[in-house]
Image (cartoon, rainbow, N blue to C red; front, side):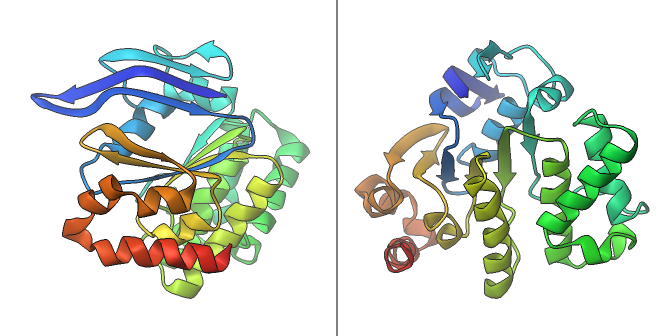
Length: 251
């Protein structure tokens, strides 16, 4: 479904992606963790077409898309969210999703309206359909961000720290939505600092540091690995161990 080979990106002398190789299979849920500055969002931006790599190739749904733009990748079946939600604040929640359905999903008329309603219901924000997006709480802005991505009809969904800034119960609500769409067969790649949100959702966990993959495998194994614990020393090795243990108890 998604293949990266030798993908490299530099900003001046700083290499934020260093000959990265990555494979995501149909129906898989992959989690990506790593310290700030590891290159996670840059990786997403290259996959989505917002940034072009300096070297390497990106293959999406069997087609080399290294030189294609974000709009074409979206129409091919790639959806993404952003760390900071980007709604059209003066438009209603329904209108925001309708734009995604029409422009990304290619639907029109009654089919587009029904798709928008279905997505809003799926993301538990239908009750706010007629509210201006700029008036939403943080949780509902996150829901809308996911809804807009789903509105494009993706086969592969990129989630960029959608749990950031939420309370524990709010994270649980959002995780339930993501688990639901994944259970329906949608492939997911999810960057997240709220590690416990990943452990009960993803099939595989990958850790980036300094633009390189330092661990890749079952979530509990990755969180318990020495290289991952070492890069998280500054942010608290105990947090990583606790996340691994929490994931075991949830499994």
